[in-house]
Image (tube, rainbow, N blue to C red; front, side):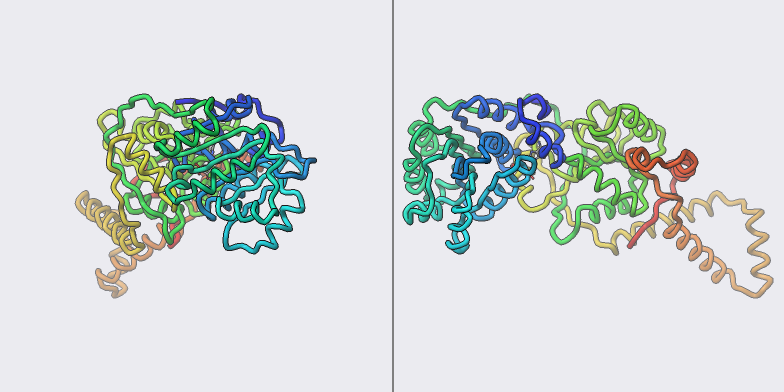
Length: 475
Ligand code: AMP
C-alpha cells in the first residue's frame, strides 16, 4: 500500500491548505502515484475506479498549474455525464479555495448557453464539461481552447461507451500547441488504448497493484443509507446488537470530528483519534479505550494504524475506504485471536462501486442487510432487559429489597402492580439517565475542561457492564 502524505508530493501551500480543509489525511494510492508524475509534466494514463480518489489525482495538479491572472481556459476536463461534471467542478472549486482568482466552470447540456457564455467571457480557467456541449460551444465560437495546457479525460471508458469518441477527437484536435494529456478510466479497452496511442504515445501508466492479503473471517455486511443518516443506522446497530467495544472508521479528519460529536450528543461513550491530535492526546484516548473507559473509537486509517486491542467486537466503515487494502486492515481489528467479530459498512449512492471493488479484491461477498427498524431495536432491547431480570430472579436473595416490597404490599398494592412500577422506573431511568456524556480528548483540549469533569465521565463508563450505563437513548 502506498502511504504518502500530501506534504511529500511537492504541492504549494495554498493547495496543502485546501486539502487540509477538506480533511484528507493521506494521499490515496492513485494520488500518490499520479500527482508527482503530472506535476513533472508527463502525460498520464490512470486505471482506477470511481471512489479511488481519482478526481483529486488530476484536479490537484490542474489547480496547481493554472495561472490565476491569465483569464483564458487553461485546463479542459471532459466527463461523461452532467452529474459527474458538476461533482468534479465542485471538487476543483474546493481545491482552489486558497488560490485566489481561479474560476472553474462546469459546462453541460440542459443549462442555458447564455449563462455558460457569460461565465466563459468572465475568464473561467478550468472548464469541466460533457463532450457534446463542449463541442457545441466550439462550433459556435464561444469557447477558445488556444491556451489549454492540460486536457483530462475522466471516466474515458464511459465516454466511449456512450458514443462520444468522435466528439472527443474533434475537441482534442482543436487544442493547438503543447498540452499535457491525462486519461482516467476504470478499464483499458482497445478503443481507449488507440486513443492514448494517438494523443499521448509516451504517457506514463499508473495502476495500483495490491499485495495479496489474508482477509480475516469476520461477519461482513453492508447497509445502504438511503433515507436514513449513517449516524442513525450506526446507533440503531449499536443498540440492536448491544455493542460495547468498537472502532468506527471515517475517511476524513473532519468526518471523525463531526461523528464523534454526534455520538457524544446522542449519549454514546465515544472519542476520536486522528492525525491533527498530539501524540499525548492520542495516547490518552487509546489508554481509555484499552481500559474500558470508552466504548467507541472514531478514527481515520492513519491514526488507527498500530491499534492493537484484543476484544473489539465490531468495526464500522462509516465511510468505505478508497483503498481496498485499507478495508482488509480495518476489519482485521475485530475477530482477533479466535473471537468472533463483525464488520458493518455503510454505503451511500455511488459508494456501491467502491463496495464492489472491495468485494472483487477480497474475493468475498459482503451481504446486504436491511436497516433495522426502530421497532426491531426496541424489541431487542426489551429482550435484553427481560433476560437481565430473569437472571437476577434466578440468583435470588433480596432481603433488603423485600422490606420495601412488604411495605408497599401493606399499603394495599398488588405484587403485579408493584413489579410493573419498578420495571417502569428502571426503564425510564435507563432511557433518560445522562451520566455526563464522555467528552472527547480533542474537545477537552480546546475547551480546557477541568479534570473533575473527566473523572465523573470515566466513572460513568468504567465498567463495560451489562446495563449500558451512561448511554442516553434517543428515539
Ligand atoms: P473519486 O474517486 O474522485 O470519486 O473520490 C471519492 C471520494 O473520496 C470523494 O468524495 C473525495 O472527496 C474523497 N477523497 C479523495 N481523496 C481523498 C483523500 N486523500 N482522503 C480522503 N478522502 C478523499
